[in-house]
Length: 309
Image (cartoon, one colour):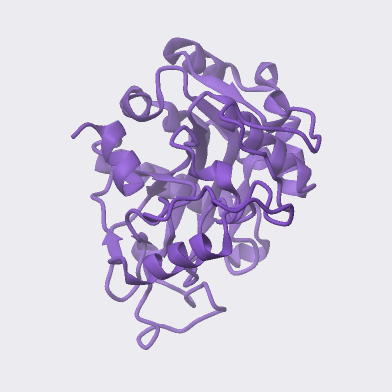
């Protein structure tokens, strides 16, 4: 089975050997330095996330994410002209225990997100191996991004459910996900996880009985070599659904998305632009792909497009 088929079936694939261990160690050093800049007196408990606007200013963070191996493997899944959205994040010591999807604002109830061409995805790079005490990577529910045998097209039309999955079909998806096997994706250092935006996942969990917590998501003073750093960035197959997704994100009027929408390719560092040119990276902001919203908006197969806020 090829990467594309594996991604469609299970909702994720592993991109192997994207970085050497030496490169990972160097990225960890850069991450420590970056969070020192955004925290007072070196207190890492204050600001534990860096988003697109700040992220792209540091080429030591941004440029490595576009090496040839990563781009080649993503193309096998999403196509040669796949879109790399201007949506990046770096998190520090975040171990969310909540099972969720990264398209939760669209919800499981909208029909169009189950189209086989709806392939909005995240790439996750974890700068540490998983640890039974300290966690550090990702738990997932394979195949949770798919509809059940009941499908998503309701045989009974309803104005209240226009463009949405029926309540029965939604219940079937919810029940199915409870019984699907949950697994820990403990990839080797230097490997990445490419996962579908509808795939249910969470952070692999520390043994909270053995560590102190600063909050629901963070460990109090973890050892430096166990401190969790995670990169995430967003990619998509280049089709109509990338436009719908970008439009939806902007309709949420979220500060993080609005800031990222204003980024221009010409304002990026010369080293980044050179990498994009060499590898033919299709870099887009949400604003680049935004389309007008109206109540008769439909996908090519006739499904009404509903934007949940």
